[in-house]
Amino acid sequence: GYLQPSLEADEIDAPSTNGIKTFTDFNTGGTEYVYAHSNTKLYQYLRNSPFTQIDKTTEINVTDSPFCGAIIWKGRYIYAQKTDLRSNVLPVASGSDVQILNGSNSSDLDIRALCIGSDKNLYIGDYGSVAKCVLQTGTAGNALDAFTIDSGYTVRDIINDGYYLVIFADNNAVATTSRKQGNYSCKIYFWDCSSSKTTADIIYDLPGNSYIIGAEMVGSAIKVFTYEGIYICNSGTPPRKIWSFTGNSTITKRPMTPYQITNDGETVYWGDGETNGQYVYANRGETFYVPYITHGSSAKHTALNFSSGVLFAGTDAPKVYVLNSGTTRGNATAQTVNIVLSGTYSLSYIKVTLKDKMSSGQAV
Image 1 (cartoon, one colour):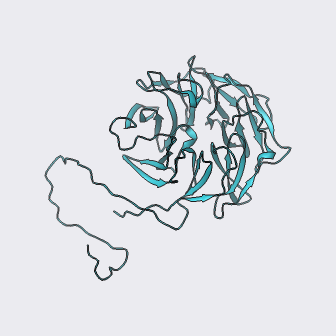
Image 2 (spheres, one colour):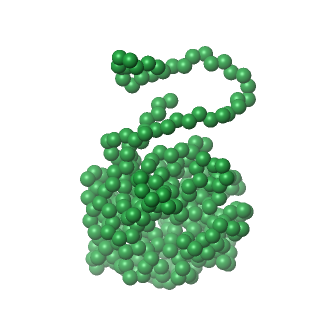
Image 3 (cartoon, one colour):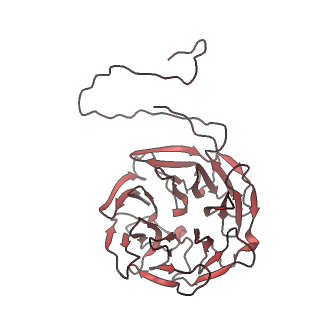
């Protein structure tokens, strides 16, 4: 194999207040952009160098704080606040901001998951239910309680597996900042949102977990992040734990919200959402590793998003970084592990291929 350190993080223009909670990428007129949204600000960045920043806050509504989540749907920028859902054009513009859903089942919500279902409608996580939007420019036909989950549960994340709308929920405290470690109940619902069904076809329980953080779909596998660890499942296979964040694990740092988890189609990345959260972690297949160091301070990650080869990371400093886009490479460490092979093997040879000619005094 070939081991090469990742590129060092580049800090770009920082937010003036509050850490970024979501990054949302879009393309308009052939130019790629990323929206970075916090509780009080919305910034637009060029997705590529020089990553020019423009403050777009005055063109949206920020009166119903906190900001809870965002997505691109039907060519518009959709963003959730504490008790409503709003829509704006792309790029956002003054006079184009409209409400498309009014109300919420809990004023304690600080994160709301948004997902486009297999029926192309938009679904929004809430306390005790999932909301549904069919119209992107008004409230007509949009419903707050399209699908009801178990009483006392809060939706933490939603993904579309190609057929089912997969809903992740637990009965811990509603606000992410108030959740506690303990003996709570976590559930995964597989709901056929294209049908008229009011119940899930499949429900999985995750016993022994405090709460669900978020989930990502990679291929046919769903990676589910809880306080205790990472599980893998799909509609045909119950959850199985593949990593622990507790005990003697080599990686014990976890994200705090679904917007701190992202993937590139093969690899799942997550930012350390705790104090001194300097690292971005990754899982590909059965391999877990640390591909990036975002910063060297005591700040924690608040958002992470993969966009066409570039990782955008936000911290509560508040600062914004781009990963894997610079020119300077960092350091890398390879560590052997003690694995007992099932049989006796004879090593015939080792082939070493060098990238450049060796200089005088160098040896393999």
